[in-house]
Length: 128
Image 1 (tube, rainbow, N blue to C red):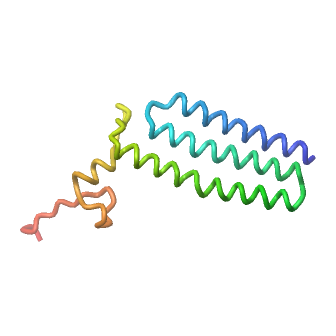
Image 2 (image 1 turned 90 degrees about the vertical axis):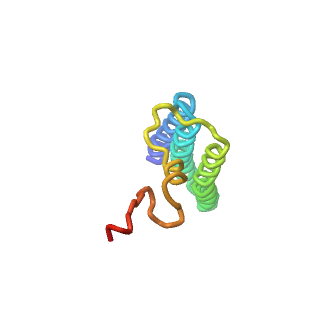
């Protein structure tokens, strides 16, 4: 039974990893490529690690797998975010089909530190 569960989880992990690779090749710009690679590859690796823990079956392997998973789950999103911010700051162009550029809107419309998010409030003091 353990072999069947392991095989299923490994196949799911391999499928997610393959989808991450296809996403990197098929997506039109660096930002969507990063989204595909970070989310799908992290999920794929998590499934592969879970399958490894099932297959090995001992507590020492489970601790090693949990440590690897925690490290990857904590560092991959942060690295993707840092790369995205650096790419945007360097002027990497967005895909032509991009509908919303929140960073550009934030720079042009209001102060980000005001806590208003994407909303821009145009309040005329005479109307108050």
